[in-house]
Length: 93
Length: 124
Image 1 (cartoon, chains in turn blue, red):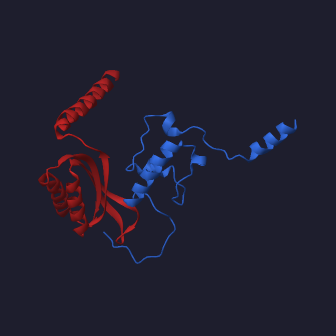
Image 2 (cartoon, chains in turn brown, orange):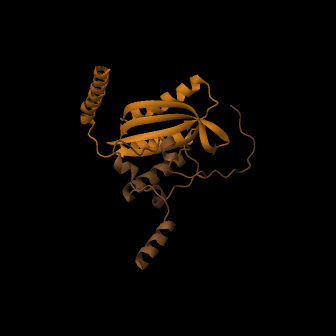
Image 3 (cartoon, each protein chain N blue to C red):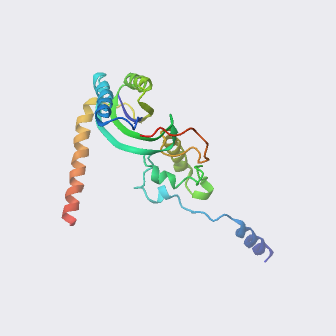
């Protein structure tokens, strides 16, 4: 009983996460740095990459995903950060 | 020969003619340096995730091509020098591709596309 109690107690604190890697479950899903919409699903509102322990991705796919997000950031498809910095007026097209 | 993909962002304020000129310029450069262009994909004007050279929009162009590494360095040098290019990135997709295989490969891709098309039609 004592064992069960501690077990239950610990379980309550565990973060709810997706247990299966989405990319392993569905092989038709491809990680592409040009596909900013799908990559954005793996970033927080601030633009940070969501950790594996939350998203549930496997190590292999998380590595590929991280590279893809970083590439997308480089070509201005995804933000590095969303903190607003005051800049001079935009050049209007 | 390797398979590369280059994305560059051009100045969004340019008119259609000068945009076309720029796109042709870089496509011709690859051809001149013995590269094969598979596809030139124009995404058009898109909002940038952050400001680049004080622009908040950019004209995206994706170049899909086969070339030697020296060609890529030359292409990137030219992109860097051009004031109308805001940003660019080159990604190597595949290594050591034989140019002779390319023709047959392209045919294969076309065939599979056609097949899937036909299947779709049959389903309907």
